[in-house]
Image (cartoon, rainbow, N blue to C red; front, side, top):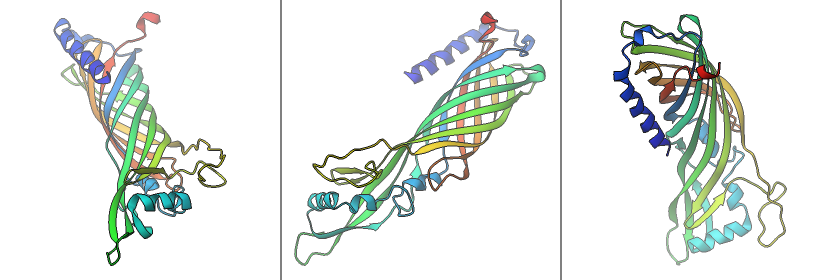
Length: 287
């Protein structure tokens, strides 16, 4: 549905080009622009290490294998005669590039200067593999090494409070722009799991003062992992002013942001490649 809206708006702007030959006479001063952002978000893989299940992290693989009930279930699933243990933890935990969508609002002042506010949402997946060493249920057989998936899913909302500047050119349709300012990133971990054959286990301990016991009356709590981090962002691009009302604005953004994941809440760079569909003077009829 989002893609259909984007395509409709884009072709609608194209159809209006022939109706407007006075772009060089337009006045940006005092107007409000409203836009939709679409793009690809490329986060820093440093923060993906939060999901590698190591002992230094709040969510550990040992949380699953240290539970005797889950451990016995895993042994049965693998048909193991003796022991099962983690041989290697992930060494290349990485985020996949994520689709980014958001909304943009800009107030233009004198000399093409302006202030803008935007909200961009992304859903990220960090993934890698880990290995198990398994003693098989056959006398004289060598231990087996199996590879299984480990992953984490998180949601991020990037909030940017930006100073922005348009630059006039001889061609009124082509308007380079620059914007930069404060970035606030809200992060929320949605899931963190491992897979063992047909079994899946969450690495997030929701039992607080204990661990899973089958058949026991235990309280399970919703655990919030994440938070708000403050950083900066800058972007540059070109506004293609297709009509008095509509523009198509591709650009590249660089973030230097703090991601609030326990043990990894330090400043790191991230990037996005975006395009914006912008509607000019959106609130004029209400002023």
